Amino acid sequence: MILPLAFESRIKEQLKEFYPEFIDSLKKDLPISIRINPKKMSNSPAGLTSVLWEPRGYYLPTRPSFTLDPLLHAGAYYVQEASSMFTGYLFQEVITTEKPLKVLDLCGAPGGKSTQLASLLSSDSLLVANEVIRSRAGILNENLVKWGAPNVVITQNDPRDFKRIKNSFDVIVVDAPCSGEGLFRRDSGAVQEWSEANTLLCAQRQQRIIADVWDALTPGGVLIYSTCTFNPGENEKNLNWLSEQFDAESLNINYPESWGIETREYKGMVGYQLFPHKVQGEGFFIGAVKKSGEFTETKNKTKKQLNTASKTIQYEAAQWIKEADAYTIIEQNENLTAIPTLYESFIQQLYGNLNVVHAGIRLAQIKGKKLIPQPELALSWQINQERFPYQELSEYEALQYLKKENQHFKEQQAGYHLVGYKNLPLGWLNNIGNRSNNTYPGSWRIRMDLPTRESFSSQSFL
Image (cartoon, rainbow, N blue to C red):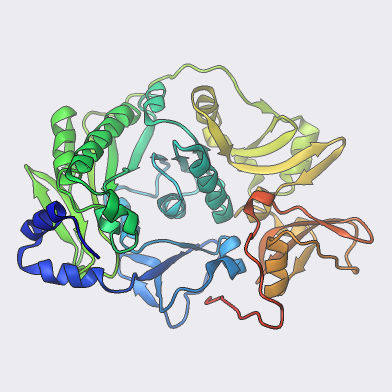
């Protein structure tokens, strides 16, 4: 790997005698790590090394073909770079997660931090995961749906749009677009695109993002800022810029020195830097600040956007989810969605002010007098699985289903059946007598050719 000369000069100054170790780390293989979904996998994987700062994070000895593991599609785990999992540790150090919180993950795609936050929040909290780019918002939605958390809203908005809902969030996480210096080992394109001018542009864009979203943070709320770069101008100096522009206090955390994480301080603002020669992971920076002031409720104006379903439909659909009393079932364009009743008013505000891609649990589509169960319900933590016939698939049958191939099980009664692997639902089959229709979303299907059944080798490590 040939590093840009200006980068090499600056990182030498940053690391001093540790520079040779840093260069050696870039020549090593990229660590492969995953994070378990505690709502779908209760047992710890045997024989895997744990990520120090994430109890549910594990390193894999080699990279399997994740596409060919049905458990990935079931949301049993998420493939996430280990250093970025430190977000969860810092979050728990600076936030009390037992109380209800409204949390915004501003730059959420593809979903690593959003799924991690969804697992950390209490059941009476709400996560809003946002992505400005439409195609990436679709990926974020897919990954969060598969993760299964019911108390999540996905939006596709520019950060400035959140000015419309002032003082709304207790926590805002900004994993800002950056120069990507921490990804040089993984992404050769990041090396080629790097320039000093680009790092300056990145720092300015990061400041614009923070300024745009600041008003949406409640007084006394916490903003968590992170990048995947080593550049002080995008990291600790941006935290200092934030403190000078807004009235914000730097938050410190404790962690074991043996983890190899460096504390970076600039003019009283503190952040935490992970270097690939010090940790088993990529480059990552993170810090947290507290907004001054005390919480005062702001009433953001909005027109009612959501209509509650009829009592008859509500009663029928409510049988499909656990803890149904905690949800309000709304009807939109012949679709039924369960949203947390505790946040019904706030979700109305989101629909009135933002571009909402998905909210809560999409339960069913209304077709005449029938309710057609939807893929989001199958994958939700809240599905009442006992209400539906279930067909356990072999590993290869599960891959055929995920490729959207039709399968038929003659002994099944007519109607919609949950299908799954290792008792984790994947989706629905509609048995209509002599055949079954595969209702798995086409946009989610496996596109690669499957090996033959005879040559197939299991990729599962759980």
